[in-house]
Length: 310
Image 1 (tube, rainbow, N blue to C red):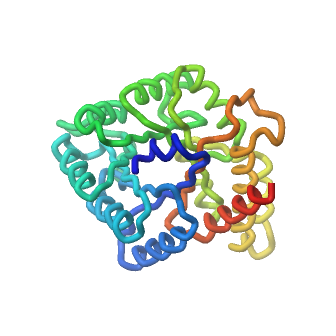
Image 2 (cartoon, rainbow, N blue to C red):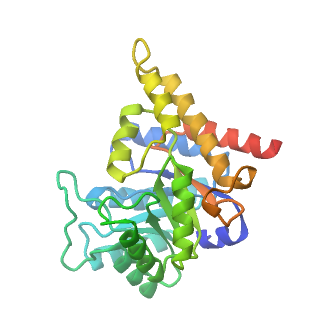
């Protein structure tokens, strides 16, 4: 099923993101996580495409297995980095042969060791170019794209970032998934600006429960996300505890904050509607799992219980 069809018939949708493992042990961990999450009946799962297209083969193989062996609708990431049009066309044809019709079109990050994106001769410079080509060449595809509630790190300012996003959506995007964020106010402000600019496709917030303090600080620095004072103070308290941060304390602090954040996104009407948000709640939630399911499963169960109780 095309994800756009699911979005038009169901609200909210819930999805999870994984990355192709580099070794056999990682593959066992990933597959165990996928089997555990299958019981939660996710609407779809996405599989990333490593920096420089380094996991292209594994991405294609993994989404095909998810589709056939688990019966979960998959979405494959596809990036411009290090690939010509002919190489990308072969990837798309393999995905379609595996009955995978959902693609997240991205420019992609530079290969490891490089700091700037380099255009591959015969390839694409921007996700908007990739999207337009996919839409024209394979109209049967459902195409998602990324957006940044707190501005893309390479954008000159918020207006330039929004203009680039509008160009990308107009090229043929069916829905958007945000980069991770921890400040709901920033998301609602971004959503209102996007709607004001004429971007009407569904926007799915991306949420990552904190499970490792050093790791989340590195991620937020890379993608330009901020950590609100409420969460920052809690993480600082845990980090300064005698004996250093304990994994279970970080786990439950991260899950609790993410649950609070998700409830505010799904049911903003319970409190003051921030920044005049016009929707009854977001279209869904996309969980960044880092290939491990305990935090996202705990978070999902909390959400399910709270929504059932209400």
